[in-house]
Amino acid sequence: MLTINLSERPPSTRILCLDGELDFFSAFQVCATLDECRAAGATILVVDVGDVGFVDASALGVLEKTWPRLRSLGVVVEMVNATERFHWVVSMVGLENTFQLAERRRPLLVPETSAQ
Image (cartoon, rainbow, N blue to C red; front, side):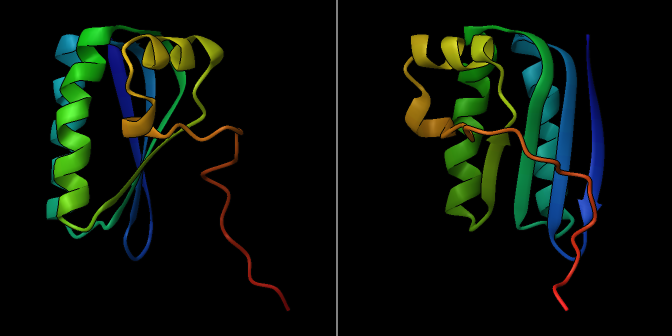
């Protein structure tokens, strides 16, 4: 089972925090959520996979078709907080260039502050 927690940073960033198992079927749920966010005006989509305990190649195959399509529409799509295991699966299926996983963990839900 996969849970998607959606948050936003106005005006145009949506953050999807995934928790659970990312398989063939749940990947379609992620893609549908990404499409809904884009349709609602989001131009930056961040997918946090730090709490994904399981990912398989079929899920990555589903997501692989969505990433280039969203990018061709001018949407920035980023996958962050991948575990070593997640990195390993991505590299085993040869999708490092598609997902360009962020190397470091970074807080996503902390409000941005301005320098004074």
